[in-house]
Image (cartoon, rainbow, N blue to C red; front, top):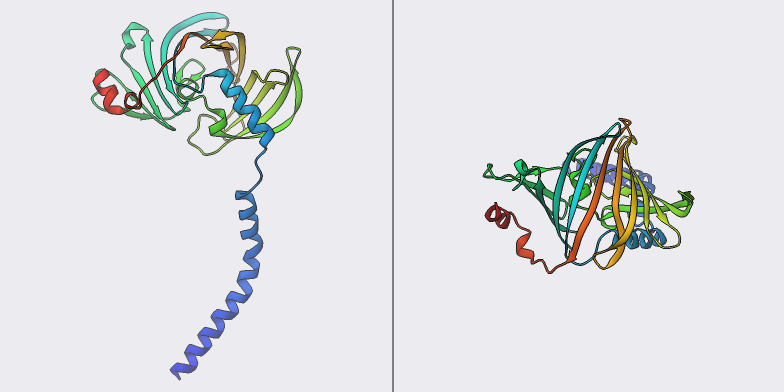
Length: 263
């Protein structure tokens, strides 16, 4: 009796496998095809080149002044010093206002912490969290579109009379600053011209224009970024870059232990 029950169970198990497995095969193939979907190589090259125009691939230091405006009236102004190593490790030091001097952001990969002089332990932050005005933490701490997004070339338009290629960038995971970016890059010279940043819901958060291209850090780059809130008309932040120099920044600088000593 026991042997008969075992044989029957084995038969039913084989029957279930023969029925269910073929039904699951299309789903497995779809998942496999999605994971091995071909990369848009042309789009990837465009985004990588634009990244290299925005910032050096080598280690560098630069200063950024952020002036916030509301309905055309100037608001608070902040100044930061950026130390970056390969666009993966970054330190953002607050220089002004004086009352916040000593605060520092440390980014390693997509992990971000803030260090404050009067707080013993660093605090974990999100790249998407607002730093000042229309500027998110990730706008200063991580500017690696090629590493953070999967690009697709979608067409061509003109931006202020300049022929541009249009790309849709989709975040590789939820740890990056924005869920989606629509990106306009100059067709002739590969310069970044404009970007729209979107939330996971598809809502437009803000727009950015890359302006005033001139030599900075050994290459012609955009030295002025204008970021405008898409939800609150008239709320604008202007980022001005200066004093960019290539430097050999050792790995040991980009650690929590180093910043604790620095503070």
